[in-house]
Image (tube, rainbow, N blue to C red; front, side):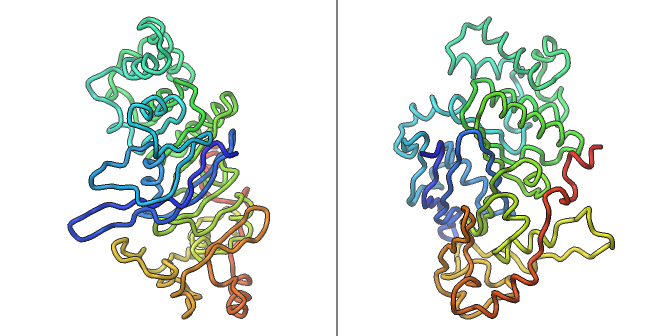
Length: 351
């Protein structure tokens, strides 16, 4: 049994223009101690799926239209709000995109960490304060005995992100959801944050769901990778499978737009033409078809997942028996990237 399992999850938002289908049938599982990277363009449903696990999707306008979210075999969607408050922060923690807006500006960072510790671990105020100092020390904030009394605005962006990590890890969660934890940080700080998360994972044995736009970060840190597009999974596999043998044209497009360290010549990056579909009016078939170089009439049908073995799956009709000629062309032109050749991995640029 997987530690965290998402099955056919559907989440929508009611707007003045209609119903926005933000997550549209997403399924995946996370094992204890593993790291899953979720990648995709803005608007693909990555953050909404993460907020759904935490049951933090605002309702209204958001609503769950179907599917399951199971943690240790129990449905989170059937939990009451009081039960979820006991789970959030203690069993499942989340690092949000912008630490400045996630931290309370009128409370010291020590008070905010201690509050979570008191709530979940039932420690005294003194012990909770000592725990806050220990957590700041753990995430390598200098002079934690003094900085614990500082307010969020007195920290740099990288230090605020460390505070968020300290808060998220203060109760030893089993699952850590990190939503763009290195966005807007320079590569040196990115490297430190990723190294810190990896160190904490090794120490606590927790599972990590890492949401990011940065394929370099994924190549450096993730065992498995889920590629999202228009609210659903279009490809899933190990990092080696996704980078070394991509099957879905969208994944191929992401890799073609990725800078490479191994290129002897300066090659022009190839962008993915067009825009993601309007989530108010999703197409009946492949959501990527309008932007795909291999599009054909059969793409207008519902697209199943094709299994390539060893857990590698992709949602594309190129692997249907009817499209063999197109498949040969796609496989021959598919980009392949060795993980140690991905450019702009923070560890490489920081050295």
